[in-house]
Image (cartoon, rainbow, N blue to C red; front, side, top):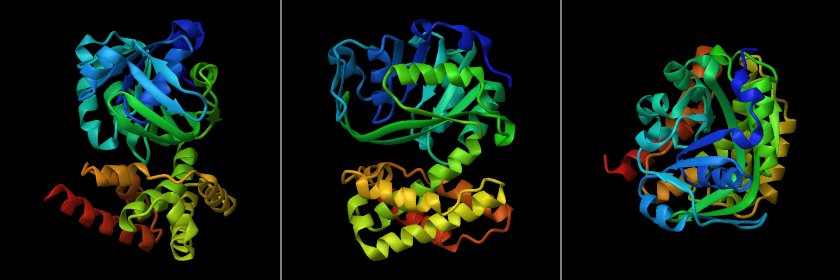
Length: 324
């Protein structure tokens, strides 16, 4: 399985974590890991001075986490080598990883990519090697509402898998079990998956329709799921995702469509991460969430007209929003 023995055998309290991207995801998960007793180092940009002085605050439905002191860094050069480097950046910032990862990752460490979409692990594998990469899909409603201030609204589970070259299924490795234990001891439920590519397609069943439509329709999750026309469009998009996944041998039946509809109905009204990026005039994560799945569909000659149309609409809106 090629797992990292140094990580697998290390006591939970001794594993050192780095959080690259201390936003809605990285701030929440990093704070929970630190609260559980782990050593955590945070890379920050605009929030660095504030967090250095005041720490991190996570308002949460599960109970607030207030950390007056955190190990904050403005540059990776000041961060110590870490056992687990958590990439919680937007995928639009992944061009920075070739500069950052080599210095912050221990020789026997692992990069845990907590990002949406396809193609993110292969990109990181080109930098650090395929045997040093894991992936995670976060099922969480969390927003950054101010400097060093995260608001956690709902959910928090991570589907965690070990990466094999070209997304070959790796099974449940000892390394996976060890890192899952760290998160679970921090109060984060973990689904350990034997097949990371299967988990990525499963997450795209939600991400493609609801992230994309939230921008095009200018709507929250509750508005989309509460409207019969938007709901039917979301279901049709989900069916296209499932068809592409099946072409790659990853079977996801219609049960997962209903599951995603049910979860979205139960979700507290939520502005998706892509809608927040659009509203704040940040670049949208179109490459990983849309372009890569469309390219995968084309390679297998699977028609995805609705996904392709949504992608083109988002490209137009994103370019206009960026002023280009």
